[in-house]
Image 1: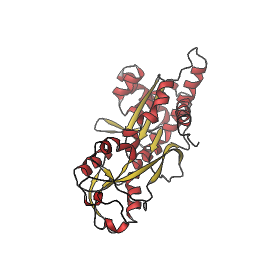
Image 2 (image 1 turned 120 degrees about the horizontal axis):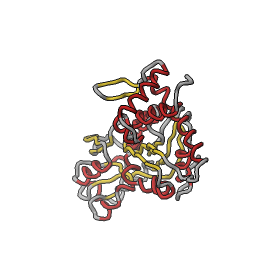
Image 3 (image 1 turned 30 degrees about the horizontal axis):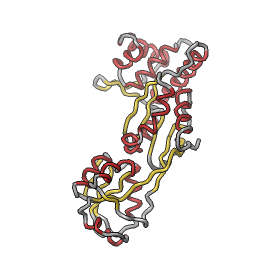
Image 4 (image 1 turned 90 degrees about the vertical axis):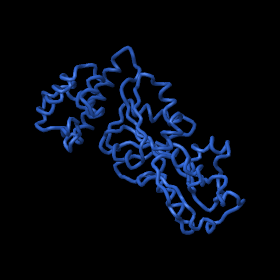
Length: 299
């Protein structure tokens, strides 16, 4: 075990992060054979493969998932030690963030702006995916931070409130319900609805709201907020949509908001990290950038 080098660990973490020998070599500014050799030497030292080789792709196996957070912590701690002994204290490195649909498409400036201004040397990699996928990738340590738009219950994850948000029930202006000044739950009997895909927080919240209405008819499922918005504009049905996604369509009159005071549509946007993950300087700086924004992060 003494024979394991910092470079071998750095190679392993970079390959696991990028999913590719080629990309890892580019990131580390070395040749692909050097990356392959470093990874092979580490696997030899540990006495076990860390990846499954599937049709030319490297996929972390169970042992790799177990080693990754430990290797990343060692690499991050050593990097911080080096940074503290140099004349350039600026943060450097890579931070992988998973953002749910609403945040990734409509609040990405709020999420990343302060951090990017304060830490230009950090490379941010943002994947826009649903809440379920974010949780899975936090748990397998392929994401550092998640930004989600709904409840997430997993004892292995630390969920921190970021800011408040709400959904609005929307319709095309020509929809029959759009002609009424007031509505009751019974007015929605057999109305056509368009929902997000299963696994998204918005889908869960919409289903909880619709449970208070008369019988509903789900006619379409779509994986993106913008696609749902366009379907509603086309008159295909009603939808609960994030307020942040509606400004342009409301201003141009392509959508209207239906009055539904009997529905609970407020929600809390949150930031998520793995409880057992080492919170190095990059993660802590990112969390701090949100805490010093317009809406304080409850750490």
